[in-house]
Length: 303
Ligand SMILES: [Fe+2]
Ligand SMILES: [Fe+2]
Image (cartoon, rainbow, N blue to C red):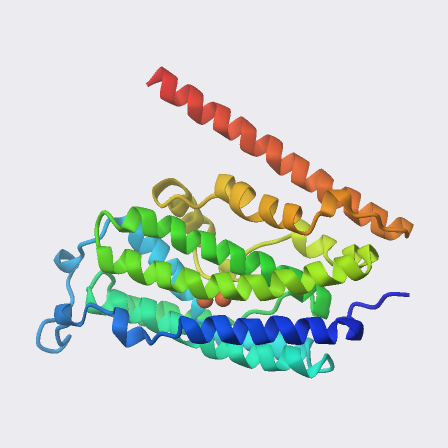
């Protein structure tokens, strides 16, 4: 009988993944002070904020602020991972600490950028930030394998989000595009570790799929707890190139293929059912995506 904990037989493999992660992240180590356009900074006492100082389009600001309000909840993400993996192998706990140290500067970078460039009202931002962290984040899954699949999706979604927003932001501010791409590189390494840990479990025993079904089918970003999240995501989908279309093509479809879910050969009825449910969900999102693409195509022709 499988349990939802990480499989101890994979310890050497996961240690190797962690070693690789440390090596790659040492090669791209960075500090957020290098990415802030400090020469734009002014004292808020001497020159108070006012709306006329805003330079970026609203959609880009919403995207950056939403990213920031997602990253600020790091204490709660670490608390969730710490709780979830407390009885797991030591290497996972080592990874969680390394991961926390790397994530730790993400919100600093985004917040300092917004403050220095005066693209947000600093008082409003401070209040929002407080509110989000005070609310916390308490997902309804606390088993190690489900968490591994969730973090894989979340890291990939974040990576795609940063790169897609960077493409739009670059036209308005090159510094912003550079710092978003820098964040995306960190997320890429995080994604690789979680994704490969999940893959190793499925290779060892495809029946592990039962622990991944729920989080794949019910995935929502950890930032979903912030005020106006649905509105924000609508703006981001239209203005900055990250919405349901991109989620299917660049996130869900990518992991479903990488984990080879369609070709797994589980042996228990429960696992076969999980595999079928995930593929059904994947098929449904694919049809929605194709319909949207046809509508976009048609709108282009009609225009
Ligand atoms: Fe991050
Ligand atoms: Fe990350």
